[in-house]
Length: 82
Image (tube, rainbow, N blue to C red; front, top):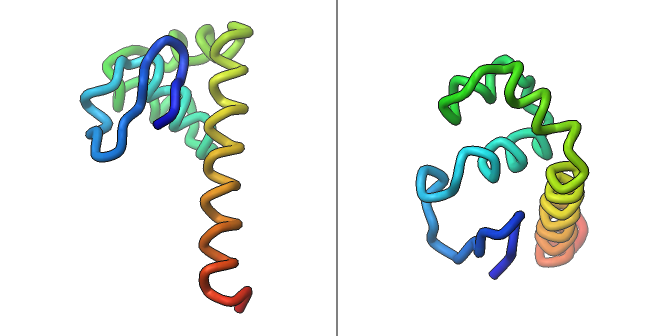
């Protein structure tokens, strides 16, 4: 289980179960452009850009990136590093 913002993210949760700002933080962490993220979460790209500047959203993005990196490292280890 992970927490992004004030939202607990549980295994098996669908992206649409998450609030738009949390979904945007995940997509920003994955490097997606704001113009693409806005419509995907139901807001404008401008709103996503404003969210991205908020300290709590920036912290969420960092947490998501670390979890993605942890997952990638675990996958490499499980595969024997090949």
